[in-house]
Length: 305
Image 1: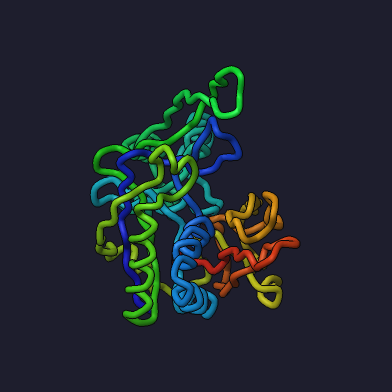
Image 2 (image 1 turned 135 degrees about the horizontal axis):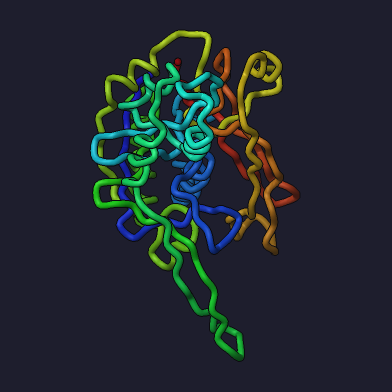
């Protein structure tokens, strides 16, 4: 499988769900991206079937969206246990808990337990910052009702990147075609306000990341949200370190039901989870009584550590 990187820059900021309008995450999960790409593909019926089959069969894989600043790429903090230098320092322990990502330039230090958490946190500050703006709801109301919307705004040289794998050029071209369409529609919430629209730039995979993708070892870190098939579950969780993330929400389809309906809840392994062996995962149907299936992406990209 070939791997590439697309860099996404969001000039107007983003609102990625944090279960509240007033807050926003800085990154998105692969299942969010997959769902948005499916909606774009459905605008041309033949594209959806083609795209879905490539993903379902494991011929196209995608990571979560992770931050970059210039040529510095960040990876999810692995859920590894180790004894860092100065382990007795409560200040350092608190700093380690605050770390969300690990810069590629500091990856080896983290794995060896030698990471300087303050230096890493200072790098993360360069990614961007959270904002909160007041909006007013007027339609159908006697009085204007103000409400606040949280967003995340990236620094000038920062954004999010997607690492994706594909088995042939036609698959890569289709992925770019749908991603390009999505760049105008936007990703995440509050798109009507301009949030979530992005520009795509081709990025070269750093050799350090390529080495991790090709490494065969007894510990693998997931770069995307994922969920094993039933037959894979017992073997993959043995000696694993992971966080389960509840994935839920409403179905974004006017054809699904006459009323706004929720998807079936699914608990998935978050990016950064560590496993002793890889698993394939699947694309799961999370529909619940609607008129058509609703698919949830759960096929991770792994790196070896």
